[in-house]
View (cartoon, rainbow, N blue to C red):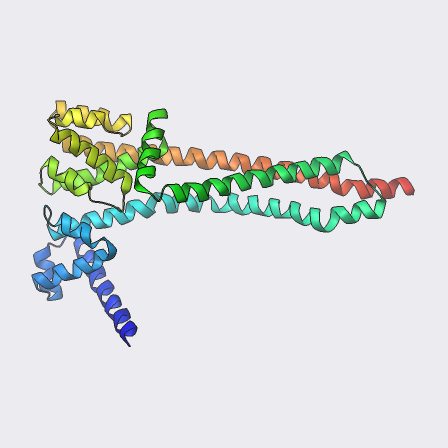
Amino acid sequence: MLNLTSFFTSKHIQMQMSLVLSLLDFGCTFEQIKRIIKCRQNSLQDLISSYFEKSNDIYVQMRKYLSDEHCLQIKQMISAEKSGYIDKFLMKLVYPSVLCIFTFLSMIFFKVNLINRIRLMFEITDNKVFICFDLVLYTISLIYLIFILILIIGRTLLAHPNTRNYFYLYLYSKYRDNIITIQNSGTFAKLFLQCTKSGISTQSSFQVLGKLSDLPFVMLLANNCSDRLSKGATFLEAISTIETDSSFKEFMHLGVYSNKVIEQLTNYCSFNSILLETRFKRIVNFFYVYVYIQFLIVSISLYQVIQIPMIAIGSQL
């Protein structure tokens, strides 16, 4: 009974929040929203707090500096950033992944069901075609095994904050404009822009972003920048030394020198989206090349195997 009550309560909260978010998208202010949904200020705050769910402590920290309206906007932005690029990236990988799996399973099927029968039927003990086929199959299997191990080890190690931060900083030290740095620089810039537009100070903006545990690399950048400001560094010095991509620093230099930081932040966010799209496209194209090469090699190997019984039958006629 308690679980059923919790379920309906959760559904009610989701429905109310969907209405609030839709009204925000239409440009309604919080005062207008309260009148439309006939909700008191405290009730609306409780509703927003429930919407943050496990991130409620983040909401509490954000409420020290931001209004509920801005808290919701940042929450929406976090959700969009966490799923947006990844979903688009994965969607583009569906077709090549299916082709990749199909060719690999075809090789296994031929290996298990046909090759051994061909060997026994025609009494073939040693053949270069079979050796090459086995070599291709074992090589592809090894590639996939290494890939799976990297994913498992990476997921395990990156679950710990210290290891995750060390990975980010090490990658940045080797190649500053890598795709992880570019993506997190863009997310950091968008959230920083949102905080700046809300009217809070730069230091307060970094303190808010430094609490976003849902975005650990953004949290790392914000805390590093906040630490530098606390030690007496200027905004430009702090921005120039944190671990963002070089484009972000160039845009911020232009913003400071022209006294148009918000405008240059907006420009950078647009530029970052295009740059990230280009980098993702490059990775997808690289994967396509690998898939087509694998498909070609597997097709040639299967063709050579099929030719063996046909040649043997032809020689007996």
